[in-house]
Length: 630
Image (cartoon, rainbow, N blue to C red; front, side, top):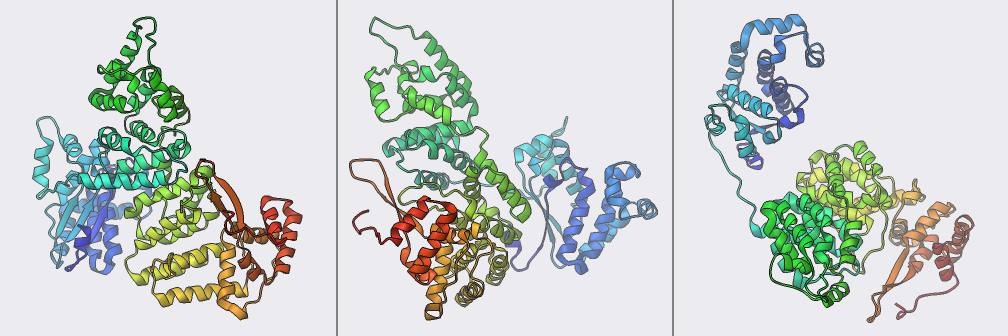
C-alpha cells in the first residue's frame, strides 16, 4: 500500500510505530510529537503549522501535563524545551484552539496525509486502548487517513470491556477493513524446500532418503509450519544439527525431529524421556513380555501432545516403527534393529542417543543471532561489536541468516552493513566443504551484500553507495570483490552499476595498488593473490613487481593462491585431498621465480615448516601435479 501511495498523486506517508515507545512513557506523550516530527522531516515549510499545532494539541491532552513537576518525562521533554509560563499559557487555551489551528491548516492541503501505525497487536492491552482513543480523537481532522495494521483477534480482545464488544468498538473507528489472505499453500511449500535445500547442500556425504521424505514432510513437517517466519526458524535452527549429524544420521529423520524441537518443544522434551520405549523391541523368546510400562509412556506422550496427537502418531509410524505396537496392531521383529542400524535411522537407540546428545540448543541460537544482527544493520559500530562478540563458529550462520530479512533491509543500512560485513570475511572459518559447495566465506558475505545493494532501486543512489563503501574497506581483497560483484565480469558480475562506472572503479583500484602495493591490513587479506594478479594482468608489460618482504603479506599471497583438489574413489566414501598452488600467477606477481623462492624462505624463517611452506617448497623444487593425479 505504501508503494501505491508513492505513485501519482503522491501522498505524504507518516509512520508511527507505537511498539518502539511501549513501556517507556504514555503513548499520548509521544503520539502527536512523533507525527509532528515526521511531518517536519517530510517538508518543514509545508507542514510547520500543522506540526506545531499537533505538538501543542498533544501537550494539552497529555495526562502528565496535569502534574507539571512530576516525572522524568517532564524533565526530558518540557524542561529542556519550554518554560512553565509558555506551557501554562497553552494549557489555559484548551484543546479547541489548537484543534482549530490544525484543522484549518489540514483543510488547505491538496492531498491527504496517510498515518501508518503498525505493530499495534504487540502492545500491552492498555496501550492498545490508548492508540485507538488517540485515533478516535483525531479521526475528524480533514485530510488525514489512518492505516492501522494489527492482528484483529488480539486487538478485539484488548478493546473488549464489560458490556462493550471489542469488535463493535472497532467498527465505530475503522471505516474500511482488509483481511490478509492466507499464504498460498504452494508458496509456503516452495519456500520450505528452497531454504532446506540450502541447509542440506552444505553437508558432505549427507544421508537423505528421498523416498521417505515425501511422507515425512506431508505428515510431520508441513503441519507444523504456519507462515514464512516458521520457514526461516526451521531452516536456521536445523542447520547446525544437520551440518553436525547429516553424515551420521538419516537426514529425513533429523528434519522431522528438528521440526518438533523448534515448534513443539513440550513434545520434544517428552520424546527424550521415552526414547527407550520408542526404539526397543520386547524380547518374546520366553513367552509374552510385559510391555505395560512402554504402553503407559507412549500413552503419556500422546496425552502431552494434546491436539497434536495425530502428528505424534505419524511421527511414530515414520520414525519409530518399534513403537507402532502401542498405537496400532503392527509389530516388528528383532532383526529389524539390524536394518535400522545399517540405515543410520533414529529408530535405533544408538542413533537416537547420538541425536539427543548432540542436537542444536533449544534456544534457537542461529535464528536469534541473525534476528539480532538484522536490527543493527544501520549501525556499523553496533553490528560490528555484536558479530565480534559471537563465538567464531557461529559467525557464518549469523551472517548467512541475514538473507532471510532481505525484504526488510532499511535503505540507510546498505552502506554501514556492507562495510561491516565485507571487513569481516577473513574472520569466518573456512571449514571443510562438499565437492561442489560454493559457500566460501566471501560468498556467504557476498550474497548478503548483493541483496543489500539490490534494495536501492535508483541506479544513481546505488552507484553512490558503492563509492561510499569502497574507501572504508580495510583490504584490497574486499574492494576487488565488491567491484567485481557490481560489475560485468562473466560469472561473477551482477551489473548493479553502469558498465563505464565499473570499469572506472576497477582502473582506480589498480592504480591505487600500483602506487601503494602493500596492504594496510595484510593479516585480513583473504584474496590477495587474485588482487595482485589482476594488477599484473591489467598492466602487462608496464607491471613492476613489488618487493614483498613482510612475512604476513607473503603468507596472505601464498594462502590465497592455495586450493585443495579432492578425489573420492568409487568404492569408498573416504575423500582424499591434495594441496595445489596457483604457481604461475604467483611467479607473475613476484616478477620471477627467484623472487618468489626468496619470499618462501623468508616465510619459512618466521613460520617454520608449515603445511603451506612445504607445499610452496614442493613447487619451488619443480614438483607439479600430473593431470591425472586427481
